[in-house]
Amino acid sequence: MAEREPKVCLTFDFDGISAWAGSLGMTSPSAVSRGEFAGRVAVPRVLDILAREGVRATFFVPGITVEAWPDVCRRILDEGHEIGCVPVSSGWMEIRSFDDYRTASQLAP
Image (cartoon, rainbow, N blue to C red):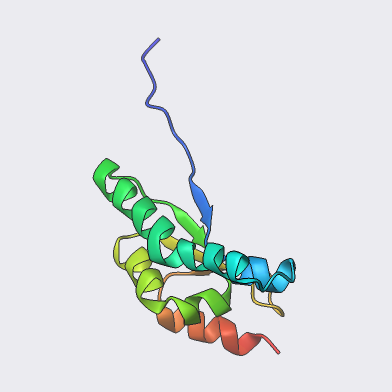
């Protein structure tokens, strides 16, 4: 039997501060700094590793995080990754460009 090349699907949640302040209601400086770490340090490091290894991934990003970290989100797209979004009124949607994001955000109430 021929050897098979391993296949994986990588996804990342880039919530930024939205998870801490929104979902968990935590707005202390410690919680906010954890949210800031994602955009300033963690996601850029992950992108560097993915680029080095030649791997593509999907990043799930709330709209508020796209607005807070547009340069990081633009880099995600520019490097060939996908951004998945959950607009309130239309369910799951694939975002491949900032125009797609604008369309999705207009669907939300």
